[in-house]
Image (cartoon, rainbow, N blue to C red; front, side, top):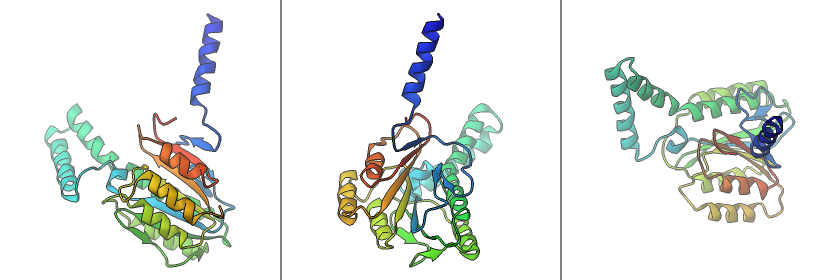
Length: 241
């Protein structure tokens, strides 16, 4: 019996262990200078690329459909009061923005812990990419505060224009790109994006780390994007390893 238990423990450890270059499910706040468990305190030339598409917030369909769905969930929650069904509806509504809000907190914490001499920029995308600043900023206390304020005002919605977002990130001439997404681009196929990044990063001067957020997703694309560009992959969610 004891031998059977030990064997089961060994198998559980084997299947739970992340592969090389992979950080698995680092739940809990990462703390200053870390980003989903990645050590970024000593990095410089970093562009944080944040997916704010509707799918990141657990939303599907058009903007109108998402609005109607949200109103319906709120109405059901109120109608059913504190009952189980009502609580589930309210919980689903609250979880819509959980991924995005967590990502914003992680970016703010990472920037806060960066060296005052480091440089960084922020880029968020839904259907289209949007830069925070037109060029890299030095991570002064003032810049860090401005970045936090900027992040606080962001809201999710729209498609997942990842290809153009990465192209715009490369225009910043970074040393490091950290991409946070559920890994479901809508403006190009995963292979098209991998090919374009290979062209842009032919000299492998830029390291790309990827953070996959969500549950029961196809992680192969985001893992390959990191592996082919010298980076790590963070799996943030259940059932992803």
